[in-house]
Length: 211
Image (cartoon, rainbow, N blue to C red; front, top):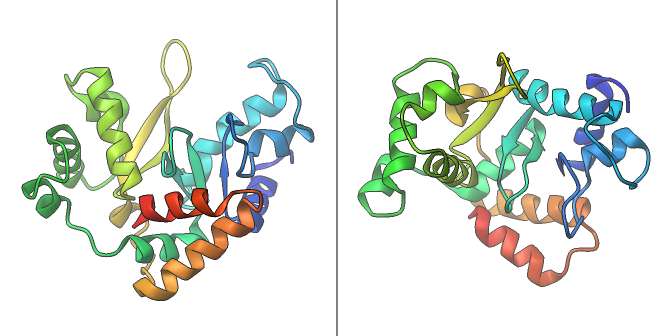
């Protein structure tokens, strides 16, 4: 896997994948596919640099949703599966969720900030005075709910590029959620196909976290 097109095609075949390998390694991994093996890696590896770039380009081009959906790792979900995952989640109003105590104040603030813009915002623009730990926690909260997606990157003067963020309903405005029942079944089948070694208990936990 040496090009963005090949990366998108791989993601389309597997449905969803982590960017980097995790402890359990149940889901497909973009880095391992780019390396061609499951061995060690470093920031100096070309495969690592390619994947680090593609993880931003795929959501920027609306070819994949990106964020922390099933735990602590960043996952890319191919856009062809987004109707199923949104349908399995069900209809969701961040404002009502916040009023009912199901969304933190920080996550609600990020959602309101993005609601007030028509496009994406960089981490620095969206964070705007919020403590880094609070910002990261709020982002994870909205990503888990499929309200927020990473949507590209912004170059910084020093260090790695910074994430950009957008609301799913705007960034993927063309995506129409499937009805809940068929969507949930399709999500279950997609997870089983992507992670055939996952236990039934793990699959149930994943499904519960989605909706």
